[in-house]
Structures are given as C-alpha cells and as structure tokens.
Length: 247
Image 1: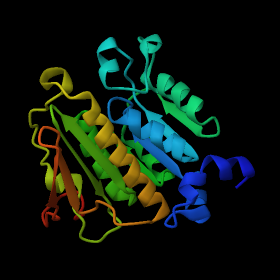
Image 2 (image 1 turned 180 degrees about the vertical axis):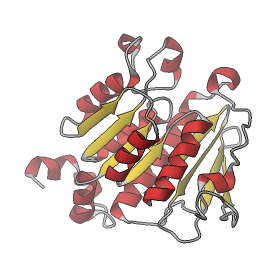
Image 3 (image 1 turned 30 degrees about the horizontal axis):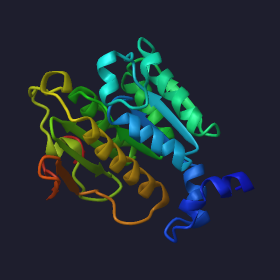
C-alpha cells in the first residue's frame, strides 16, 4: 500500500476491525455488481470509494429521465446512455484507481458462471426474479457469497446467502420459483432514499465479507419499514427439499 492509499483510506484503516490488513484485502478484492439502478448506484459508489480493487458491472439498460429520482450514480447528461457506461464514469471520478469491467448485455448461464467464479462477492441489485433465481443457482454452485437487496414502495430488505455456511438458506428456500407476479417500481412506486439505505447496507455486508469482520446477515433477513422507521429481523431456515442448495 502506497502513501496515497494510506491517506485516501485512512478513516477505514483507523478502524481496528479493518486496519491495514483489512484495507489490503479490499484493494485486492473482486466484486460483481448486477444492476446499476436504484440499489446498484449506492453499492457501486461506496465500493469504489472504499477501495475495492476490481469491480465488474452488469446491466443492459439505458438511463431514462424517470431513473434520476433514485438512481443517483446517473445524471441528466447521461439520459440515453448505457447505465454501465454512465456508472463507470461516475465511479472513476470517485476513485480513478478502481479497475472497472463492464458488461452491456444480459449474460447467459455460462457467461455469468464464468465471471461469478472470478469474484469474491456477488451483489444482486437486479429488479427481476429470473435474474435473482439464476444468480442464486450459480452462486450456490460456485460457493460464492451473494448479497441480496430489494426495495419497493416504502419497504426494503437485505440479506446474505452464503453457501459456504453449511445448512444456510438460499434464495430459493425463501422465494419459490413459481412464476409469481413481480412488482416493479414503475408500477408500485418507491421512495428515493429507501434505495440508498438498502444499497448502503449491501455495500457494508460486501465489505464485511471481503475482510472477514463482524457477523454477516447470512441466515437473517432484515426488513425495513420507512413509514415507521423500524427494522424487523427474520431468521431464514434452509428448506430440506430445496432443489438448489440441497443438491
């Protein structure tokens, strides 16, 4: 670690749980972020600022004016651009030393598996069940921790699915893949800062997984109600008949 890095990350290095050793782990880490929308925006910015050495960004969507209410990594000048390109530009302005790799199309199982295998942590900021179930299957098979977040209307939730922990629940244990009706922000609405709260928690869990500090949310689902400003914690149990994590 050079003098510039010691100065840049000094406030994190001062934390006894992280110190220089933990910061070096962050600098050496590789993180995959799926989705550069409302959740992916704070996730990507905080991970770049924290010093994650290599970030792979995946999103095939373009920036629209309706995104700007909550997707704070993009600005008015980015309308019409690919979200990954807009996000990468903003992240480089935060930390030019962060290595960025962008994927501008939806990845099939083979391609997604290949980049999951290269990553230390996967952060799911997607907005559709198909992607979430596919990510769950791949991360379970690759034994790569998955940080999952979601937000709609005035409620959000965050958890970690860590297949390295024996008996830990996976996404399929919690949500059955039965073609359920998917609610979207465009149909139901969402409070702008709510995405920042959930996305920031995803970034915290990612850093904890990289550095090995604290107790992660594996096996616990945190649900946030912005109206009452309250958190509820649910214990997640592995489904003994789950076709994914019981393989």
